[in-house]
Amino acid sequence: MSAEMRELLDGLFEAHPGESPYLAHGDHVLTRAQLRDAVAEESVVFAGHGVGAGSTVLLQVPPSYTQVETLFALWRLGAQVMLVDHRLKPSEVDTLRMLCRPQFLVRGGVAGRSALGFQAGYELVTARCGDGLPAATGHRLVQFSSGSTGLPKVIGRTAGSLAAEVDRFAHIEGMPGPGERVLLLSSTVHSFGLIAGLLHSLARGVTAVFTRRISAADMLSAATRHEVHAVFGTPFHYELLSTARELPPLPALRAAVSGGEIMPPETAARFAERFGVGVGESYGTTETGVIAMEVSGASRPSVGKAAPGIRLRIRHGELDVELPEGSPYLRSPGEDRYVDGWLRTHDRAEVDASGGVRLLGRGDSLVVIGGLKLDLTEVEAVLREHPLVAEAVVVHAGVTEAYVRANASPAELLSWCRDRLADYKVPRVIQVLPELPRTSNGKLVRRRDALLAVSPNP
Image (cartoon, rainbow, N blue to C red; front, top):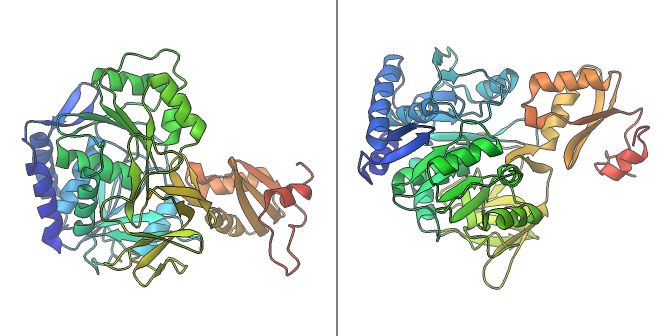
């Protein structure tokens, strides 16, 4: 198993000439050969720290050339990499470390700081964990997704799984091809940015372009400087781009794809009106990778047909995806999501006569904020850990709102959350109530209208 990831990387690098550009940031363009040399050098450094085949490494580095070089170097050595969003706070990272027991921690930048945009490099700090354990499975990528128990779901991907998804993207009509450039705004820690952005680009001879800051001016400057053919981002990015006062000419731009969360129709329409390019959708999960995709956006409100090799079914009104290779969960997810070779997405959906998948909303407590998934019960669990909180209910209606029964002030509870949750998870509104409404059988009510009805400050 340990050699499979190195073989995958070697195959991706060798697919196109080494002198062809791969990553671009401002005036700094990194070729495939330059990156491959940097990866080889980093591999020697990590091997000197004791990292090898089957080692477990928690990696938390902001978006940068350093992040890409480090990830590829660790994979080249056969390590199992636990990829952690740089926005997570130290307490959240500690939870992941205790849950997964990595042997090494590799960090860059400042944990919990939301550095928007891309930097060329960061200084790395590598630490050995005395209680760490080697990999018990052949999974070489480990990612995390919010779990309904308050603990994250631990999700593993094998080299074979990643290779299959790269090939899946390559067979989707309209994806960037050899010699083209894509403005990659999606996070490279999460599946769409990592696999559709970094790995697919490496495989197909595409240049991934990054922006220094996430602002309309900086994104458009990067798109103009590198004459991009496509944009990959979240609805937040497209909304921001649509606010630009003046649009530079972008004659090469032919495609834009939104991943991470479903784009509101009005956002897609506004972008198409201003840029003359429709916005497609890429729908998937951390567990499965891409499920359905349509690059042009012509099939809205459908997110497109199932991606090549994906089998779907609608069961009890929700979408299931076949995963015959086994459960993706390396730790118990706290809920029965993988049964008899099928993963329950908990997305309510329907499939039209042409095979297009139309999503109708969530069937559980998961919400998506700025392309990042959050289970509202995770926030409830953090609030309940406060010694003066008796009960907590969190809802999402445009923003995340918390309603609690507690002997603490909203300001105190807000500070508590900020110390323990990534910024995007922190409730924007916290209300302290003398009692929380309950159903006739005693269960807490999670409807915003019922909570507002008993609130002194509706």
